[in-house]
Image (tube, rainbow over all chains, first blue to last red):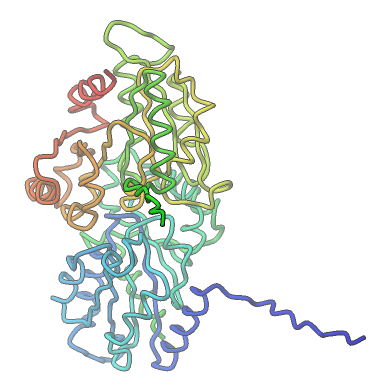
Length: 229
Length: 229
């Protein structure tokens, strides 16, 4: 009797992970670092990017010393509102709508990002920021090929969000706490929020910013420039 | 030759709609009206309910003249934070966690609600408020057997949200615009927001409230008492 050797494939990937790896390989071939930026609706991702691009002067393909060339991939259920805002800052912006072709999905997945790659001038970028669909649940479950995952949490959302959406807070290496200019007007306990962040993701880096006033934006820009290297 | 008559079933329902109808039948048998309350994370659903229950004095099973007996079904990915807050107001509160049994879903569906029905004292309620998972996309796609759908939109989320999440704004018969106490501190154009609401759902009713200060809460309570009839 023959004994058939069965080869066990231990690293069976789901389709999303397979495609995310292909995206990642394409990014690395082009020398582009990629940040997946996530948050609840209205936490201020787009305003943060507007402020960032203006501060860095990253538009007009300007490869000045130390300033990365930045592109943006916008994810929204429908419309191009955010893409239009950012395109006015003269950076390459590509919009993915999850509604028509992808069934109204509440997140970006690797295949959606892959579908957009041909439209992004990767060879002329150092950094691609992917602005995910506003949602604190599903975007954290889908890798898209990114090198870094960052979330924006607004102080208007309450101290309890890390405890209610722990996967999102755990999936990120940096939590950007936005709208701190509103703290004097809110019943929001910042210490308790940061304690809750640390409870679900011990030691995760946090930056306090106001995309509106510019407070804290220098530290964020410094982090982003570092991420582009 | 025989001709076989083929009966065409035109109203083929998906599983969710079938179960939503069963839920609805159970609610009607018990004489309970049901409101599905939806919003983005941190828009203030729980604070609104706290304020509402305190204002109406709906706890302690008090069936005083004109005050409905209210119960709450809480939907969260995990934890019982919101349920604990509301239970302290002495109303029946049941928590559904979408994480352990349901795969971390970002919304409630009819089957999750059905799974909870046995734990809710329907015969002792006039109104059940279902506080959905904080998310502006998927909750709008799943009927759960409710009579009314209401969304809470916070003024901190920006004027563009109706245009970016139109299905949610269209799925509701009432948009509760919350946190209006923060308007003096925000670059938020209320008229433009209401224009956008009307653009995606012409004529939909809007109520302006601050769950924190109590402004506008009387009108909301009046709407809710009407919905309980």
